[in-house]
Image (cartoon, rainbow, N blue to C red; front, side):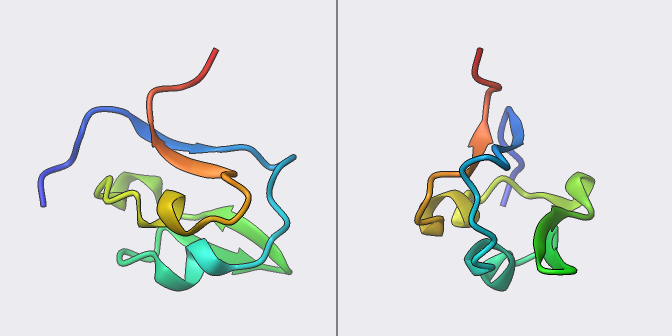
Length: 67
């Protein structure tokens, strides 16, 4: 899969640390550390947006930074 334009975006205020994004990230970019969702290896992100599609709180997405 070719990497798309944009980057991984995350709003920790919206995140309830449920771990869904980390559980389904195909590259292990997202992990639960000490009960908190953490971006651990952003350069490995392939831009598949699985995390964004599965997040119940819309707290993570792949794309342009919002103003």
